[in-house]
Every structure is written in structure tokens, then in C-alpha cells.
Figure 1 (cartoon, one colour):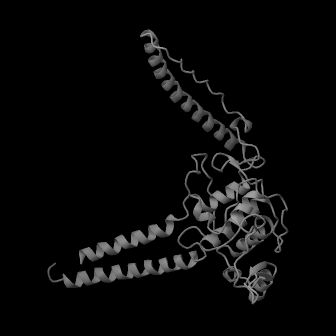
Figure 2 (cartoon, rainbow, N blue to C red; figure 1 turned 45 degrees about the vertical axis):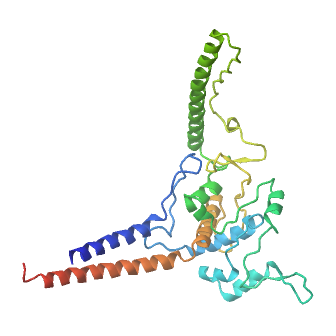
Figure 3 (cartoon, rainbow, N blue to C red; figure 1 turned 30 degrees about the horizontal axis):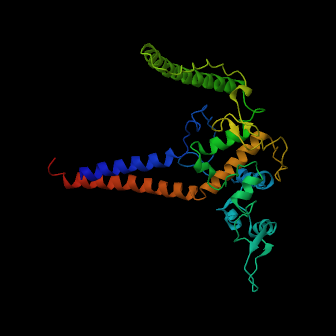
Length: 319
């Protein structure tokens, strides 16, 4: 009985930990500056999606992101989970042009989208996408919040806080200090290697052996500006992208969309909304998962109580 009681408590702790572990963020990819944490309605055991924000995020995706980024794993009919009616879904699907077929003549043809269709990709294949975007194919966004360690925090920081015109002076200085330290560390390692090679060179010369003198590494200059980071041509600076150089130009601008519900379309708001939407595309069953987890927690609590009561009754005479 004691083992059953302890098992119940262990399972309770495990399920509770599993429900709360997902939203935590991590260090930015590439060991850059940490990604800031934001408040999300879907965080925590009882978290749910902000459907109004997710609907606005869908609008941002369709008007800003869809020209380059696909959404391969989402069908129009899935939007019912965000509160859209059947007629609204049909209207949105009909705006899309879908390649279907073959027809009776063996040829592919274009038609209006239907609710069971998936969001059409903006390019026919990855090579076409790369060719149209300076060699860098824009990634599919369906699972993007799961593909990045910091999830929706990373997306919101990337789009709303990371570009040169957005990033704070404190974050810039943190990047400059970090990159200067990296250069100093690399220089010190190169200097140690140089001194070792120099000793070998001098020993060879002393023995009358012909050798080439090693080149002494140059002392690095401190990073004091974005230009000092040495980003490749065609890349935009972003504080939260690995290596700080991103092929995507700043996508969001004030009033870049006109929200149907009248919400002011600030960059901060649009970044928040589209991150909400892309969190939903990555985990549309999040609410069901948490709901099931809560039921399991309740069951384990009740079951643990039953086990404890049974133990007391079985061993009552012994005590």
C-alpha cells in the first residue's frame, strides 16, 4: 500500500511538471543574447489561446507573411478551432488558388480553394523560393514555435524587438560586449598556438633547418557598432537571430495591416498576434492536452486519497 501511495504522489508530480514545462524559454540559438520572456494566455496549466489575438495573427500572416512563408500543415477547415464560422472559412478558402488534378485529360488545373484544402504555398518548390529570396528559402511556419527553443518568445522578439530600428540600446551594448569577448577569447587561443609554433620554428632554425616563420595573429578590434559585426551583404541585423544576420528584411511596420476589430496595428501588437497564431498552428490541441492533464491530476488526487484510506483501514488493527 505504501508503494501505491508513493507512486500516486510521484505520478502527480510528474504530470504537474509536464504541464508546466513547455512554455519555458532558453538561451537564443547560437549563444547570443537571451530571448526576453513575454506573457502568454496559453502559459501554465490552465492556459488557453487568446482567440481574438490568434485571429488577428491569421490576418497578419495572410497579409504580411504568406507572400514568402508557407503553412503546409494547416487546412482552412482547421480555422474553426479559432472561432470562424463555416461561411467565413469557405470565403477565406475561395480566395486561394489551388492546383488540383489530374483531370480526365491527364492535366493539372487551377481552382478556388475549398475548406478541406491546405494553405497553398507561395512558391512551387524550395529552389524557386530560394531563387526569389536571394538564395535563402523562407521556412514553413506551421511548426516554427516548436522548431525554436524559445518558441513564441523567440518569434515575438525576432519580429517586434530584434531589428536595427527596434532593438534597445541596452541589448545592443550587451551584443557588442559579448562579441568583443568572443573575439578576445579567439585571439588568446590563436596567440597560444602562435607561440607554440614560434618555439618549434626557433628550434628548427637553431638546428639549421629551413622553416617558415609563423604569422602572428592580429589583436582584434572591439565591436562598437552593428557594422563591426561584419554581416554579409543582403542580410539585415537582428539581435535574436543566430549570427545576427537574417535574410528577411523587417516585416512589420506601424499600421501595416488594418485590423477588422479596430485594434491599433502597432509593431508590438502585430508581433504578439502572429506569434499567438503560430503557436496555435504548432499545437492546435494544446487546450485539449491541458484539459486531459487536469483530469488526470484530479484522478490521481482522488486515487491517492482512496489508496491512503484503504491502507488505514487494512492496517487499522495492527496499529
